[in-house]
Amino acid sequence: MFNKAGIQATVYVYIIMMIAGVQTGKLQILRGQSASMACFFREWDKTTLIRWRSKEGILTSGKKVYKHENNIEVQKPTEYDWTLVIKKADDGLAGNYTCETENGTVIAQYTLEIIYPPRIIQDRSSATRVVFEEGSTPNLTCHFSGVPTPTVCWYRGLRDALDTGITGEILRLPSVSRYASDTYICEGKNFVNSRNYTIDLQVNFPVEVDVMEEVIKVQVGAVVSLVCAVEGQPIKEGYWRDPQGKTIISGWKFNVTAEKDGDFPVQYITATSQVGALLSTDFGDYTCVGEGDSNSASKVTRLVQSESASDVIN
Ligand SMILES: *[C@@H]1O[C@H](CO)[C@@H](O)[C@H](O)[C@H]1NC(C)=O
Ligand SMILES: *[C@@H]1O[C@H](CO)[C@@H](O)[C@H](O)[C@H]1NC(C)=O
Ligand SMILES: *[C@@H]1O[C@H](CO)[C@@H](O)[C@H](O)[C@H]1NC(C)=O
Ligand SMILES: *[C@@H]1O[C@H](CO)[C@@H](O)[C@H](O)[C@H]1NC(C)=O
Ligand SMILES: *[C@@H]1O[C@H](CO)[C@@H](O)[C@H](O)[C@H]1NC(C)=O
Image (cartoon, rainbow, N blue to C red; front, side, top):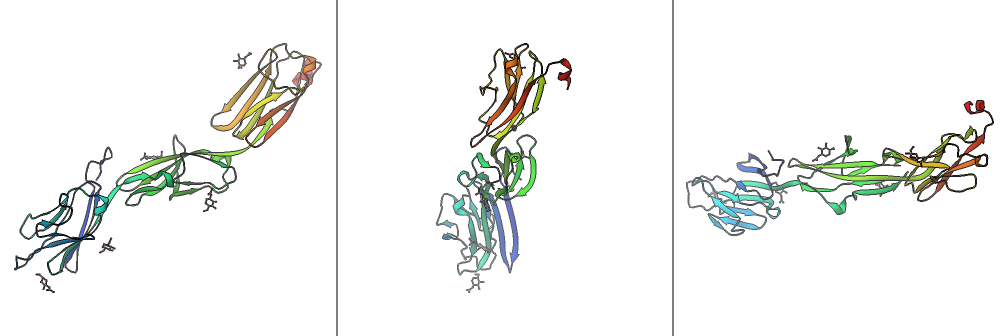
């Protein structure tokens, strides 16, 4: 019925029936396309002039056109036909059309609906990127214009988007969790076409810190890795502090790396001692610190010196 590439073809739905001797029809015409409405009147008295009337009043009488002269005409394929033709349908021409005799007897009646594909109404919809706190109740909103009124359904995820099965203009996320951070797609759809709009949701939560091991026993000079996970949204910083309270940076004693875990809001901070660099004065409490927007958190790994090789195995 329609051409996805550019909607060049006419979407044209024409339902017609007779109600109490009056032809009654409903036309759905794509914006910009032409519409024609038939009116057949056969009487002995052929001098009767047939009129078309709309919400604007009398449009035509016989073949004479009173309004929209450039856009409207009456065609007579037979002498009994008084077909009203609208060359280019626009929103202003939507409404009811009545074909009648001079004395007001109704012969045909049509409802003209101008249809068009969904389009996002930006200022009544969520921004393309929104940020909420964990535990709040975000409402993701997509308003689409379009006739017939588009239905809206929601998908989650950018690649391999999942159909949430939720429909309607508002996607409510009560008491939202950190795991809800994702891309959400709303699809506005009517029979003319469909259109997607994408909203990136970021759920913020305070940072939390956890260490891989609370106590590590090694010998002087050993290579040891201090590993901690900093979880939070956003994470401004994550680092290790030595027993003297100084931030550890990569150098001759330690090599520090920070790794992300895919799209999860977590960072793994690893400080690995260089071969032979660990001195007896380096043992003590190492603190992993995570800093977020509103808080910071920390946790300690105790580095204990072991005397013998057997201690290391424990
Ligand atoms: C057009 O006609 C239909 C049925 O005759 C009616 O329900 C509807 O309200 C009319 N619409 C307008 C805009 O007058
Ligand atoms: C109106 O005109 C039609 C057709 O010419 C005719 O059949 C009908 O009787 C007329 N009605 C009135 C009220 O004059
Ligand atoms: C979302 O809608 C619900 C219910 O209408 C309301 O309680 C809540 O405050 C809304 N959330 C936001 C962030 O506006
Ligand atoms: C909208 O996105 C969904 C999920 O990715 C996809 O299935 C659908 O085909 C898209 N629709 C349009 C019009 O791009
Ligand atoms: C630190 O570790 C990374 C990854 O293990 C390595 O690629 C890099 O060369 C190391 N840097 C130093 C200064 O040792």
